[in-house]
Length: 337
Image 1 (cartoon, rainbow, N blue to C red):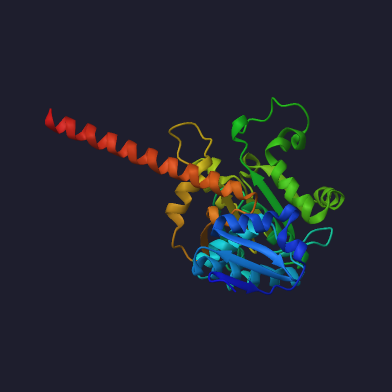
Image 2 (image 1 turned 90 degrees about the vertical axis):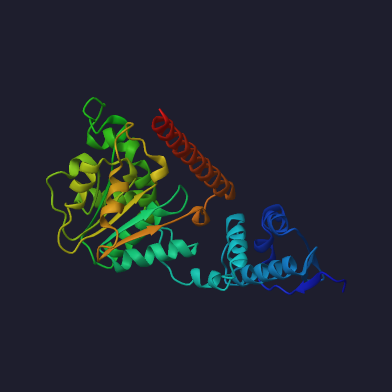
């Protein structure tokens, strides 16, 4: 065997491992700068450095073990496996898929797909109030919904309450046509989508009619006490400071709250501080409250989203640095004058 090559025997569903049109393998080759081929029933890895070959072999072996257990391998999982290998944490990958958070109404198991998601789920289990903060695609809302359905099925709570600020309408929904559900439907649709996936549309409708599941805009939470409930506040970055305080004080006995949001997507009017940002500052370190931050590495949608999130984060950091420098120069100029 030529130097720089290794044979990596992989068992399991090779078609699943390679992906449609070999997209998984092509991505792995690109990320690690190696060449991978199937020869005589074994996967051959060839690369310019022994380190890249070793890493590719380790990733393939780990993904192959998942394939053998029937897990689906896609490009997002391949990219995450490489990230773990680069941090010497690849052994953690197989443990992610062992615990089932919940099941969909079609019987599909819902599992954490990243270490950050696993920590997020653990935080929800352990604490009464959990903040899930991170970019789009990290599973903040979906996993919170899965935990809510699991708690309802195990009778840990008697109902689920889902809420979200309707920022675009300024929380003034009266001018929209239709009843309450029709008025707020565009703002709450992501919550409905997750709920339908977990329980099915017909079951959700029956539960809503019985009051077991309630979906309402944040404005309708005022003056209430929510006991024996699993409460999810989604898109919390668009709450005002007053709305967030109002919401958090709605908690009753034997309830659990999950607050999700992305501080990089605040739609409030300029000059208004996000209630989510303030709450994280105020409540950090308080017992029985967890603040779980998810990053671009926890994005489980298309791999391009990770690149988009990183690009926007870098742009925001650069802009903040420019604004700080500009302000500093202005102060220095005033001192000179």
